[in-house]
Length: 143
Image (cartoon, rainbow, N blue to C red; front, top):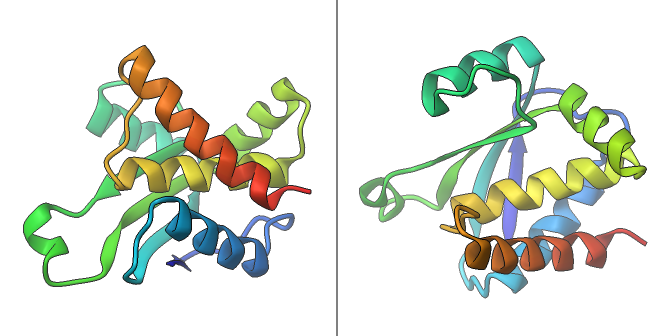
């Protein structure tokens, strides 16, 4: 199971119940037997753009950034890493895809955790695998 620890207010359409359920779904999907913790902070477009530029060399806002703990730190803690999510970018994605903001926020949480778990989408093969897992988790929660 994954426990999300938020260090900022949740967007109004996302509940602690959603996050707890997603944590269970992700834990089962990833076949993790031990408890893991992920920090989550909802941030402004300005801050996420600054961090995107600093860490990824891309000078524009993004929807989610993942910061994984190094392997040596993971051996002594259940803390997997941190996710930064920009709600305004999530809202743009939701409008573009014609889905609810709640669904998009759940998708970004799942996407970020999969990155923390070591998944990536740099190649078409990796993308297919990661996005299939992501969508399976999202669809399990969105009714």
